Each structure stands twice: as structure tokens, then as C-alpha cells.
Image (cartoon, rainbow, N blue to C red; front, side, top):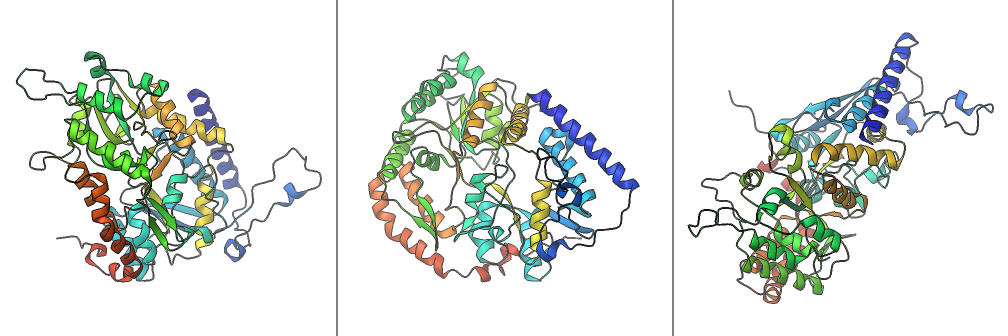
Length: 495
């Protein structure tokens, strides 16, 4: 399938190049119609001709954006690299095609580390620095939305965010008070799951996690058992040298989501928290049982470790399993790029007793949004929709995803399991994370449970009032004042 896909992308690139060459020899006088006036397509007379066959596709609409440069910004240069696979190659080719056919230019802008502050200060000054920006979902919602920095995408007819090409979890994460603000082109970079070192599992006689998944036996009890069995004292000094498991962050939330206890839901007023679901108690009980009965690493020693030390140690064979987001597969584990030399695999977080299926928790995700105050936002939406039209069918999109996974994964089973997550929309992004005080109170409560300081029920009773207060405070929070705070001040370069 991969070879077939590359042939198709190659053909697309060649076809685009031929089209550009022919257009370059013809009349370059811009069409007289204005896209912005109605943002409607004018269909060519040839395709509308009665002599056209009914089996022929309607001709692609004609647009003229008047030579406008559409700017897409991030903390790095997001220009697609055709050498990185079929998806990037298709995106590069499509951008070139749109630029030539529709009289516009796509520019990717590297804004550096102050990128969010750049969005805020430029919008407030009435001159948005870019048209489309990269943003982490918890930064967007609620701060940049309530602060007037983000434009509601659901008010732009060109964008149908229910289309197969968009990531549904990101669209949902960016939905606020009934409007959509976030979009992200489909990709297989799902969130948290369990990476496992197959070489160490074989060496120490641990069960094959793929077998457990296939048999429906990959659950909390089996997870706890294997995490303990994986602890190895290799030199007999009474200290663990190889740990069965590490969790850099978000273990508690994975227990909640893997039991169907989603806690937060969107409402017309913003967000609601429901801790009365019996699955919440069940999940917190499962969490406490694990943390109090398994020796594992979940606290980075900042005096001698970096934020990614757990990831690097898993890569280097010091852990049998780790809880991580899927992006580490290409960033740290790729053998071809001096990554993990042991064989590795990936499975979803184990199922809780009340779970109906697998889950994939995400605390956040990168997204794209349109800045408020951009010139003719309907044109921005239309152009972004055009450059992301990379496949004609769902099957072709699946091929693009599989090609990317083939480059990221160590085995076919990981490809299968990851594909199951995103194809069945099992990835869900935390809706609480951006609400600072509320998120802090809930995480403080969860920490008390995880450390064994409070039982789940006592913790819920103890923190109920603080949680309700934090929810009530959201309605009165001054987000406009936040936009003027030091957090969103651009750092001037030093001499």
C-alpha cells in the first residue's frame, strides 16, 4: 500500500508541475471576480456545458485572491517537507497548486518562543501578525477565545469541520459555548498510551501485551501485575535497576478516562464538572490501588534530571513500560535516527472495569486557529480549506495516515492499534486543562488520592466546595485583563 501511495503522490506532484508550466505560458491576467464579496465559487463555462458527460466531475471552482499572501505562524517554520513522507509531499504539492491557480501566496512564519504573545499583542493592536496560528488547545480555550484573540471558525461557511480530513478530538477540544475555534488536519499523532520494551519483556518472561489486548485481558489488574514483575534488581544490591513502569505525568487522568469517567463536559455557558458518576470513585480507587502497591517512577528529580529523562531512559532500556504521548515514537524512538535500539511496541491504556472500549487520553493537542481581526477571514478559511484538500476519499486519507505510521512505528501491530484509536475517534482531549484555578483544584484533589492521603470518597467530599467555587469564578473571570498581563508581553531581544 505504501508503494502505491508514493506512486499516487508522485503522480500528483508531476501533474501539478505540468499544470504550473502550462499556466506560466498562458495569460496571467487576474480574473475580475472578487472572492471576498461572496466567497462563492464561479464554475467554469466549460464544465457547465450541456455537452459535458454526466460521469465527469464538475470543474473545480475558480477563485482569485488578488495576489494576497496568507501567513501561517508557529513557534517554528511549518513549511511542509516532501522528504518526510507522502502527507508532507501531498501538502507541499497542493500548496503550490493553490498558489498558482488562485493567485495567492502561502507563507509560513517562524514566530519563535513568544508566538502566543505575538498573537495577543498584534490582535489587540489591530494588526494580526499572521492569519492562521498554531496554538495548544488549553491556551486557546478559554483564554484566547474569551480574550477576543480567536475568530469563531463555525461562522465561516468554507470550513466544514465535520469532514473526514479534520481531527475530531481537536475540533471538540476547541469548541466553546457552542462555537468552534480549533482545527487540525488529520494525523495519527494520538495522545497517551503504554509504550513497552519488547526486548526486555522477552528477557524477563513478561506477558506479550499484544496478546493481552487481543484476548481482552489488558486491564488494570494485569497492568499492575506486570508493572511489579518488570522491576528488576540486576546486580543484587536490593535496589531496582530496571523499573517496570514510569509515568511522567497524567497517570490519574488516564485511569479516569480509561474507565469512561470523563468528568468535564461542554455547556452553553462554558464547562460543567460532574464528579457524581460512580465511575469517578471506581477510577480513583483503581489509581490509588496502583500507586500504593506498585514501585514505579512518577516524580522527576529536577536536581539531576530533565523533563524528558523518563523518555530517554525508556529509550535506553531502563524501563519496561512508560506512559507517554505517541509523538515520542518519531522524536525519541526511531531506530533510523539513533533512537531506541531495543524492539518496542505500543498499546492503549488498559481498560477499567466499566469501560466499553479502549481510550486515549490527551491533556492537550496542537491546533490551528484564525486570529481575530484578520483581513477577510472568509478568504483565510477558504484558502486553508483548499490547501488541506489532499485526498479525494476517506480511503486515500487512510493511506496517507498509514504511510506516516509506517515511518513512526516499530511494528505492524502498533500501526493497527493506533489506527483503531483515531479511526474510531477514541482520542479525547481534557476539557478542564485550560481553566487554571479549576484544573488546579481538581489535580490537587487527585494528588491526595494518588499519594494515599485521602480515600477517593473523602477527597471528593473535601474538595467539592473548592471545585464549585472555581467553576463559579470562571463566569466572572476578567480575560480581557489577562491579555494585558506579563504572560502575553513580547520579550524584546537583548543586545
